[in-house]
Amino acid sequence: MPDDTSPERTEGARRKRLPSSERREEFIAKAVEFFAEEGFESSTRGLARRLGVTQPLLYRYFPSKDDLISEVYDAVYVGRWRPEFEELIADRTRPLEERLNAFYGLYTEVIFNREWMRIYLFSGLKGVDINRRYMGLVRRRILEPIVAEARAEEGLPERPATDAEIEFAWVMHGGIFYYGVRDLIYESAVSADKTEVIDDAVAALLFGLKRRFAAEDRGGR
Image 1 (spheres, helix red, strand yellow):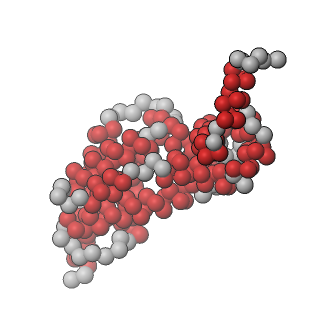
Image 2 (tube, rainbow, N blue to C red; image 1 turned 120 degrees about the horizontal axis):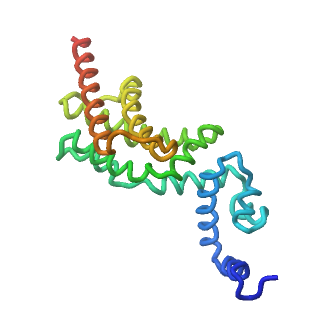
Image 3 (cartoon, rainbow, N blue to C red; image 1 turned 180 degrees about the vertical axis):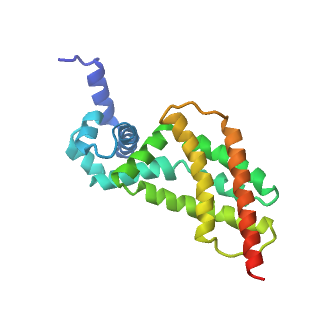
């Protein structure tokens, strides 16, 4: 039996002294680690064991597994979103290519994280809606603004991005993401540094969008 100074007793006493809000944050942080390692098929019972608490106590803070997953999404994806992302894309004092290179340099600092990527990939495999929610956020806050800024830089009138334009932007965005997957998840050798990959992907996107805009202009004459 552990004495009063044992690590088990000390940890238990520390957890008992935690305010409810701090305990909740601790549970969320541990849930992020747990789902990143074990995937979303793992049970809340397993998470409770990892936390050293009972499952009923965990459910006092999160009424269902879906509620806990929603908190994980907020912590990993919404909570790590930086306001300067959108500000960079919209800053028309700089050429768009320069803006996008700077944006993707910052953005990949956030997403090129093994925990971030494993949760994203696990959620897709198990049908958890983290992927769908995050893809919607990326479309609204990154891809649609990029297409709008590309049109503005070409002096074209504003209009909503077409589905084809968004798909084209996804190819670029997904290519940068997959570079990180190969590096952090598959641990395969990558043949170029991140900056070079971003520069090439952005240049290809802008070249392709210009061609699409020019074709649209010719078709409208």
